[in-house]
Amino acid sequence: MSNEGLICWNCSKNTGLSGRISRADSCESCLADMRCCRGCRHFDPNRRFQCKESIETNIPNKEKSNFCDFFQVRIAFKKAGGVSYQDDTKDNRKKNFDDLFED
Image 1 (cartoon, rainbow, N blue to C red):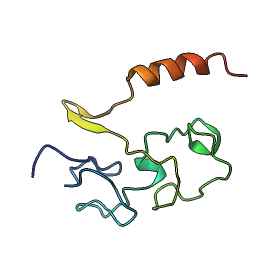
Image 2 (image 1 turned 90 degrees about the horizontal axis):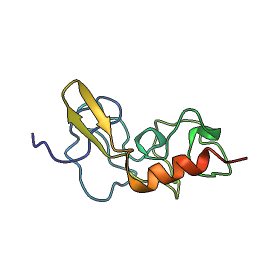
Image 3 (image 1 turned 45 degrees about the vertical axis):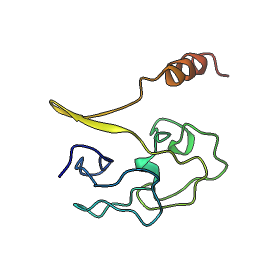
Image 4 (image 1 turned 135 degrees about the vertical axis):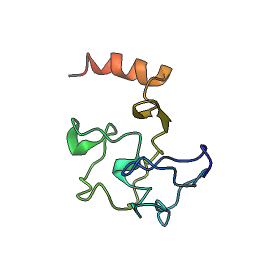
């Protein structure tokens, strides 16, 4: 299997998926839904409703496909010792700084 493509949020294996992710997409290895909260770059267990975005209602099952308008694939890549997620971007660093002064 190629080293390119989406890494599964559940089993950390290459899903074989790339490009736009639909609600029907799932991991070939563990069958986990890919377009879900756990597979989204906005997922944060320490935030309200476990989301960095200002969502109005809680999505109870974070591991099942949903219709969230804020969904963006969480970019992950394999490296020695496990899987790393791409969180260190210029926009993310600025948002983290701004969040320090949030009321």
